[in-house]
Image (tube, rainbow, N blue to C red; front, side, top):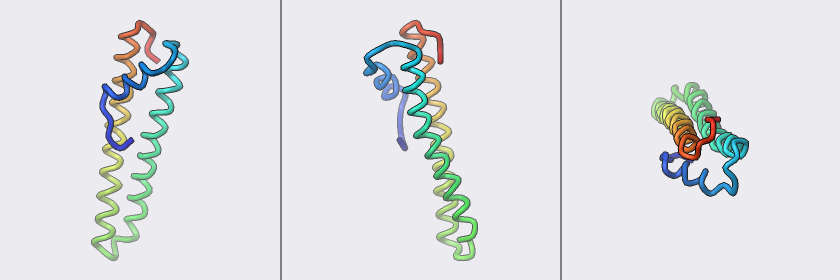
Length: 96
């Protein structure tokens, strides 16, 4: 779940056998769980990179990787939220 776009997420929602708001909410939480795990890995890389700064290059690489993962995870969370709102508006269900 490193890279995703709005159409892929809406396609995942359309594959659900039901258009119930609870099913959409559950699917959204599964997608958010993966994005939040990516965020956790980003923080882990940053924290692990700080003591590695005495080696300079590996520390900088770990911190840069952590920042990249954090930024990517935040963008994925925003895309998931936007896609969920647009799908709910498309099928006429209150946004979850």
